[in-house]
Amino acid sequence: MEPDAEKAFLTSHKSHHPRHLLARWRRVAKATGLKVGTLAKDAKYPIVCLAPQRPREGKTLYLSAGIHGDESAGILGLLIWAEENPLHLASCDVLIFPLFNPHGLAENTRRDSRQRDLNRCFHDPRSCESIQAWQDLVADRSFDACLCLHEDYDAQGCYLYELTREAKPLGPSLLDASNRYIPSDPRRTIDGRRLSARGIFQRKRSPKMPEKPEAIVLFDHHTNLSITFETPSEWSLWHRVRAQVAAIETVTRHILDDPQRTTEINP
Image 1: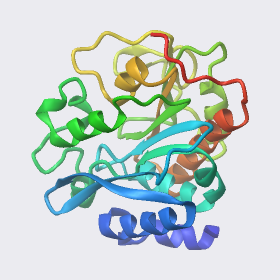
Image 2: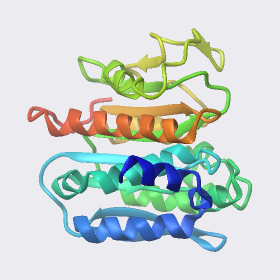
Image 3: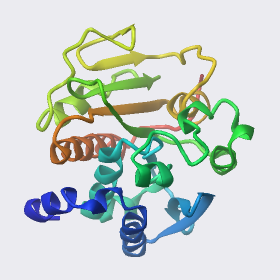
């Protein structure tokens, strides 16, 4: 998408229009050989996922956005990245959840139609039909990398959580890319936790939490690299979206350019 057209789209009401966004994803799927499946429904909206129509050899990538409906830049960034990079989508085994909380997006709220924070349901899938369907879908799968896209109302810049068993962290390269649009969050502590480096929480072991969110469950069972990327939701939408696109591009290049990667999980 050309910059002027992109800015016009981002400043229109379409940014919180699930049916419009899903129609664009269906066009992406048609162009890249992906299949659009329905994971569950929430109110009047389907919760969809995209994957190859047949299993593909090669790298495996997990991408997720919009689990909180008031965090629109990740949703739009993932869509625009997909439209700009059809060859990547056509050449790897990808699983995409482009809009996990469509009702929340339409209402500009964090929660779904039953007032649940979906990212606090992964520890108990039986409490939520969409999370149970998600668990059934990913049960036997492993991924070279998983990227969960979020935003933070209190953020003063971009930051990320990186769970990795790899020798070299990816977080610094990801922030270098996103910093072309938004600087890293300068705070030393966020939500009471001290950062490992500027804009980065980095751990090699899964944190012990009573309610494990999507990214931690993925790290526990499905990947050696799970990143949650956050943009500051009070900044310009265009800059937030381009920062999200830069993050996705960094993770994608990381897995596609490394022939030695393995998805064997060793928690």
